Image (cartoon, rainbow, N blue to C red; front, side, top):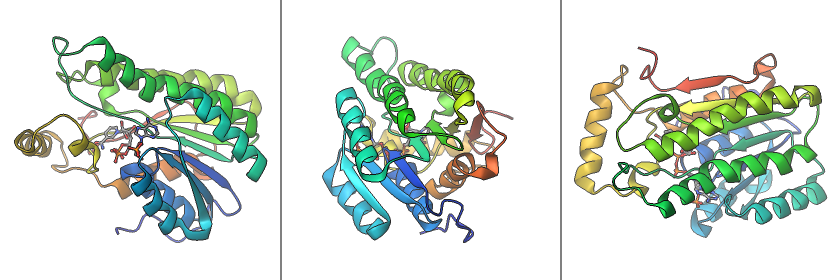
Length: 256
Ligand SMILES: NC(=O)c1ccc[n+]([C@@H]2O[C@H](COP(=O)([O-])OP(=O)(O)OC[C@H]3O[C@@H](n4cnc5c(N)ncnc54)[C@H](OP(=O)(O)O)[C@@H]3O)[C@@H](O)[C@H]2O)c1
């Protein structure tokens, strides 16, 4: 796997929670946190991918099967983390789902599910996690470049991710008095299983890949490891004077 860390131990002795850390960006970040000395607690729903991360983390981590849209389950998870570890130093709220549907194709169930996973679950995860966090704590929320672009078919996903961007600002302002920083991380196209999990056929995925490579100034997808490096920056003391921002990691897609 492409290395993420330069060998520093920025998270030695720290407890890091990655909600949605069993695949893609979350998995790459979880492994990088562990490489840099953290004890890493990872959640997801799929027992197979969770077992793989558990094996990769070894003694440096723990996994829990937990659905972020289940608020009571997240609250219980935080209570268990409190009982076992006492505190959280870094909370990376990364769980998310995506699918393209035009307004004509969207129904209420699709809308509710997207918002439950991408926005409501993350909101209450932060609410329950901050009780375990204190001075020097860092929260990173995974949004998307979709929160600030008008991509056809992306209305529900983009709106849910725009909510996360707003939360980074307001949580950042509210939690500054507790010494907790809150930042938003907005990936552009990153090569992860997310692309194949959606509702696109193989032919549509191939067209989508080609379109991305033509439209992104850097001419390619980012890797999960490139995304993880930005997450670790926001989570670490390297960004100690940074709060409330949105860090776009998109090969220039939004900025040019
Ligand atoms: N890849 C991109 O191009 C891209 C671009 C912009 C933003 N993002 C965002 O980046 C984040 C990570 O995506 P990825 O590309 O790494 O995709 P991924 O490989 O599909 O990973 C998503 C992670 O979230 C977990 N997850 C999904 N629904 C969950 C739920 N209800 N409860 C708990 N965990 C859940 C997944 O585990 P389970 O499925 O086992 O639950 C998995 O660990 C997402 O928030 C996504 O919206 C990705």
